[in-house]
Length: 147
Image 1 (cartoon, rainbow, N blue to C red):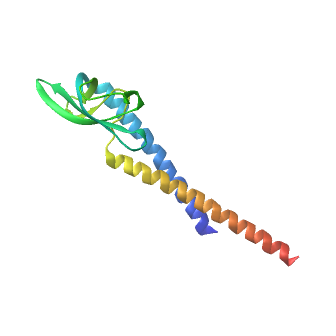
Image 2: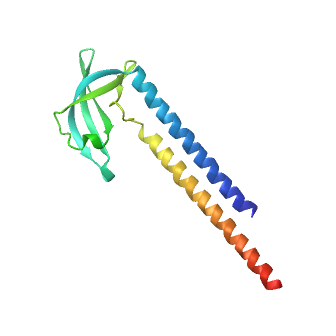
Image 3: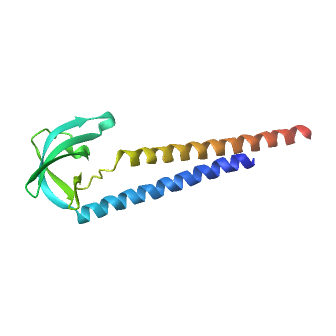
């Protein structure tokens, strides 16, 4: 029973870490949009990936220098095609760090960490609760048989 409670607690901790990570990533993007500089860029390529996720390569100009980068897009860009204009936000201190307004361009490693925290937390929590309930029902059945 103690082990099962530990599993439930581990699940809760992982879910709390997931929640903290989600808030930090959202704050990171909000700060990026606030301090970033907006320029008009051009879509070079648009990739439609699994489950409606879109990524795009964009070309934009910073201080007279042409740059190219990748951004994540959402459902509002489903009809986008190469050559279409797009607003690009870049970090003045790191012009290769870019995003489009309203859409976080989080690093891939951060997304993997978030997925592991969410799935691990849910799995541990549900698994631990299930084990606790099974043990409780088994104790209850054993108690009825003795009478």
